[in-house]
Image 1 (cartoon, rainbow, N blue to C red):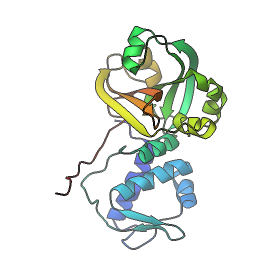
Image 2: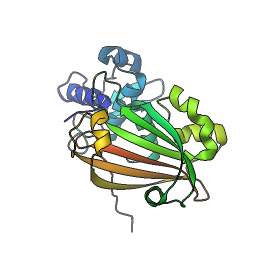
Image 3: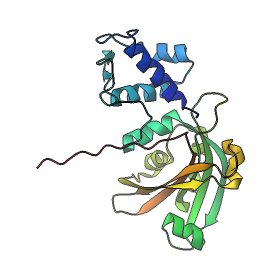
Image 4: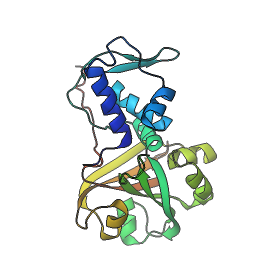
Length: 244
């Protein structure tokens, strides 16, 4: 099973905390030092530290660095997680977008059904591989992002800022913000035409995630369809009981 680069860094740091290399109360090396040690990008290191925070192993404060708070996770086990819009932004920063194709299209009936839009709606489709920054590692997934045709001028920005979510590019240029993201998750078989770019055999099991980006009025201006081969991505969530 292929593990993402930031997950590898997080796992190594967690092991260092557990075995006393980074004792409770100590401060982890700076982001710059960790980047140099692991040969990783700053985005990757930040994503790894975020995972340690989620596990309750460390805390971060401005000018004080990253402090080790516990030697074992508050909840057992380590796994990549994606539980909020903030996590999704971090995911975009840690897993660079490598654009494979862009195309203007009009939604036919099957596409309209999948995207939940009207037949005939115009979209710009941006097809990309998602990489974790570890040279030579297999892609963690393939994503087709459908943005409103009015935002076609984003083509250059999508290519030149591979670590920024397309929804953030839309917000920065057009002021349209994702107030809500709805997602549907289902098991699928990797489509034959994606087997080679994802480096898997035909018929390999995978996960399909469809995310609808809605503005404050509830209108959808972007939809992404991601395909992840089994073992390369995991969704995680927490369920808390409401106070009576």
